[in-house]
Figure (spheres, rainbow over the protein chains, first blue to last red):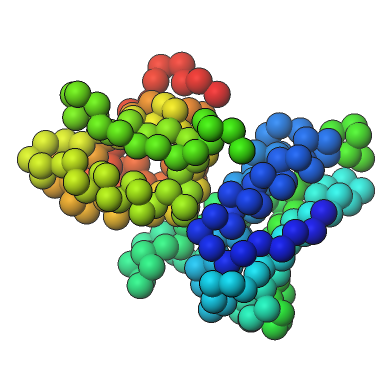
Amino acid sequence: MQLGLPVAVTASMLARRALDGWMEEVLDEEAAAASRLAATELVTNAVQHSGLQLGDEVTLRALAMPELVRIEVEQASSAAGARIVDRDDRRGPHGGGYGLRIVDEVAQRWGVEPGPPGCVWFEIGGLTASGT
Amino acid sequence: MGGRDLFDIWVGADGVLWLSGEFDLAAVDTFMRVACDSIDGQHEVVLDLSNVRFLDSAGVRAITTFSNVCKAGLVLRSPSNKISRVIDLVGIDGRNGIRVERDAAPAS
């Protein structure tokens, strides 16, 4: 599954709607809930911190692999700045730092391909019988 | 998109702020406008989360920003199991005047 998402505050909602249909056949309920949360965080990070402008797009990809799913969010700019912020160091200009911490907690693995184009991805298990 | 997924916020007669739907980046401006307009700065503020179906870090960040103006404290009431998990992951319970009140047997 691949989908272009507008750089807008509604992007993560569009990502969830697309994933909900796709994941229904692939992931069990717990894994699907974790995936929609982690995917939301990656899309929101790209919208807020990629340096892209309104009218640009980021790309959401979801791949069913032998024992897990991999979800990627690609942006035309570099993703080198994607990192977890320490709990006591969240008073930066955006007051953030929660997003990738959530991804780190709910995904089995995640990573950054700096690019450009940059890509942040995660992998998660919990495939249903039809997803294997 | 189902109507129950759309974010909404309203002020109850008792001053409780009732939230529903998906609390993500798209909901932040509405939340901040309504929530900040509703408080008097003198009393503890209660956000009822029982009808919030989704919460992400953007929503959490809005809650923590709002907590800065809740001088008498901010209660997050009745989050579901899914919402509780996000709150626990980011560790905001007990920080910045925020207190989480969970139901004895929260709904999933």
